[in-house]
Amino acid sequence: MSQLYQRRYLNCPYNRARELLAAMVVTPEDASREQQLRLTLPVPGVAGAELGKDVSVSFRPTADPMGFDEPWTLHWEPLGGGLYPDFDGTLAIRADESYATSMLELKGTYRPPLGAAGAVFDAVVGSRIAHATARELLRTIGKTIEGQYRTGEAAKDAAQPQG
Image (tube, rainbow, N blue to C red):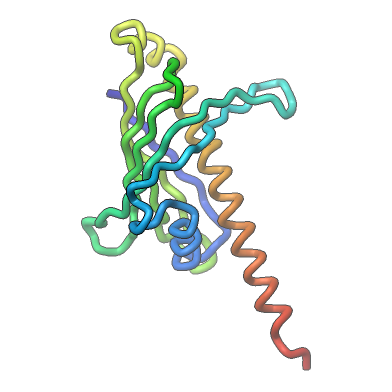
């Protein structure tokens, strides 16, 4: 098993980021439904080019041992097979040091496909690909959360009486 840990700081307050993440993932009422997600990896040196793989992903709310955060367990597996590993982990919003920011965190484990050959590939380059893919996933989710937060704040500001 290989470990994966990535985080991204968000320009969005903790409580609002938690709400926006929860709205993005499958809710408990939809727990039996899996979603399709496209994992992407930008190709270095080629503007706008990326490699991608569709995965089937399920999210479930889970308890935080500290009773503070609201992490989501997630599992994904590649659609149509291929050389992408299955992944089991958590996706969570964590509090940051200031009210205005929070952290988006992904951590978990994956088993490289192809047995011993896959483990060697993972040790040489696969782990870097996995981490870069996780960073891109968090960047995409983070941009969505920050965009929705800014849109909501702009709507509140527009609704305030001018005076």
